[in-house]
Amino acid sequence: MKDGRFLTLGIETSCDETAASVVADGRFVMSNVISSQIDIHTAYGGVVPEIASRKHLERINDVIGKAMADAGVSASDIDLIGVTYGPGLVGALLIGVAAAKAMAYACDIPLVGVNHMHGHIAANYLEHNDLEPPFMALIVSGGHTEIVNVPEYNKCEKLGGTRDDAAGEAFDKVARVIGLGYPGGPKIDRAAKEGDAESIAFKRVYLEHGSLDFSFSGLKTQALNYLNQERQAGREINVNNVAASFQEAVVEVIADKAVMAAEKYRQKRIVMAGGVASNSRLRALIEEKAGARDIDVLKPSPVLCTDNGAMIASAAFYAYRAGAEPDLELDAVPGLEF
Amino acid sequence: MLNSCKNMKILGIETTGKYGSASVIDETGRVFSADSSEEMNHLRGMITLIDEALREAGISKDELTHIAASVGPGSFTGIRIGVTTARTISQMLGIPCIAVSTLEAMAKGALDRAISAGALYVVPVINARRHQTYAGVYEAVFTTDPEKQSAVPVMEEKQYMIEDLLEELRTRMDEYKGSVVYFTGDGIDAYGDIIQGAMAEESYVFADEAVRYQNAESVAKIALAKAAAGKTITYNELMPEYMRLAEAEQRLKAGTLSERIRKPVKI
Picture (spheres, helix red, strand yellow):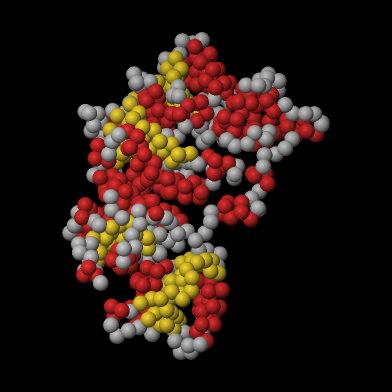
């Protein structure tokens, strides 16, 4: 406790960001330290798990130290530690979990494990301080494309998800093939702004009637076939047009399904989360479609969309308040479900 | 020597092999240990083991003066759990760290038994798969005073193909006919047949399975000597000794990382 506020330290190492943050009362970000490895992994065209694990180990202690220093607190002020224990890369997760447990033990602070996906949703509690469940959540990231009903804090009912590639994965693959490189999401977003989204007719995959699931692998193949065919015909490829048309085909389906889910469950709010939630076209389109049906769209600022410790701290705070048992035998669970 | 270091309480942790363990050693050399009987349970079980070792020793964690970790070589995952745990406890309690080589700890831990078996060399061998090992070769120096017995490194601790390691040992043993090599570590489990095939009969001994694997007691003992000699480091200096680059890094350096991955396709 400091100045009467309950302080949670959140630790996140599930992929390629080493992150820690101090959050007061589950809502107010006092510090948010994110050490990204993206420059290192770019040389390999994607995240290399073994290298990610090595880098997390080298950085985790200073990241935790800086998170406390930036917040102006010391370990004795921390009331709760929350750490991502899944889903994610197992070697990456275990660095955060091992550090969190050692700190919890050394400083006698309760520790709770946090589901990374719950963390992404909780990022919105930090951005919108009066937001409370229930609401509909849309999580779009490198590894996830999911529609989740959130009836109460830390309760998540998955209504639909991807049957093959996540949206972020599809972005990465197409970006690589059209020469934009890694990470694909932001690069396609940028290129698409200069292109014509109607120039190439990529298909919209809605699956069976009423389904809230996604499938992007067919679209990815269609994009690759288009590029081959143009190349064979000797026609010059307009990268911006490909980016814009491909992106539109992805985000239109996502936006439609999110709005469909909100209507079906009579939720008046759609809450966005995950790295791809910072895609500017997805944000604009979902607002337009939801707005037409009187549904509000909430989204965290880009820094809270990427993997960060603050969202983990917030989710930990609400889990602990709801009675989650502190656990010094916490294990990493790479395939953790919602 | 040890008398000059009053009130030392060192926590040693070992997570580089199959079974995790934690030990507390005090300035008199008394050791209190907790060992896991569950395989590869390092992440889940490490804090419980540490707590048990401290209870055995009858001290609280605030009385610890140093924390030592077995830094490898061995299981990458295991190394990371141990090193991260040690770094974080060091950072939070504000106490220094001590890095202990896993192979050195294994060699010193096996020394008494090796000498009893009449061994000239102690050879800890860790299975690194596909005929690879992490190994070192130590000369067992016998004296009448058991306190002064020592394991002196005579070959570099590094990655060896098991066949190369054995070839080297055979050459050395030619000069000392009748003496014995004492093997320890899970390399015996993986390459026992190869060792048997390559070494002359009665020129080697395998450590019993009960004492074959890494343990925190040996780590704590080496840590005590290092602490007394002032060989302590900060938590940021405590680094894993993987002895191997990540596979992707090897390929990047060798220029064999797939072109498709390294360069975006030009169209």
